Length: 224
Image (tube, rainbow, N blue to C red):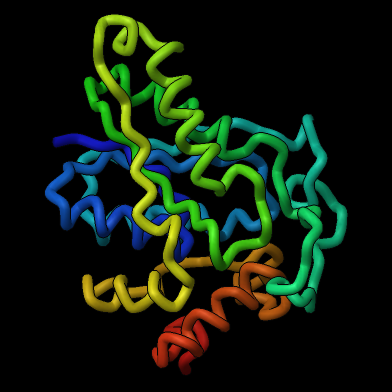
């Protein structure tokens, strides 16, 4: 079986891809270079793709900076030191329609490849409140995929796999450890230093730190 996996170089996408590989999918990895300020993740995506021994790794440039609307694609400051668990607002790191765009690109490539499975590492528990990480969004996109493609019209059914969607960050990390993943290859920070080191204060860094702490596992990025 062949699947297109959205691979960002982050902890979640790495784990989701590894789970799909353990389920005997042959992986074609899609990394989108969308003009994000944390471009360090592109190097991480290459390292992760190599570790997973993917069948093919496609890096696709789609510059969303012209659209704007996010601190990840502009000079707007990235929020720091938020109480992510208590926050009810959608933070400025939300990129408008990002997962819709990414899944659409993955769907197009999957149709060309003859694949009917797409893997994405979205999570509806330990995340920053993004609307495009919810189960109802994934269900709606699967319906769209059937309606919007020639393969769907001809009877194929696309499935979007979200193996992490109901897991906490700690559970995700424990699953990755079980699979032998090297999280030292990954990058999570929204606003890394000039040398690529994580800031330790953005939502993504805080969620990552919380996950490793609760999992009882040291974060390899912070060792040494």
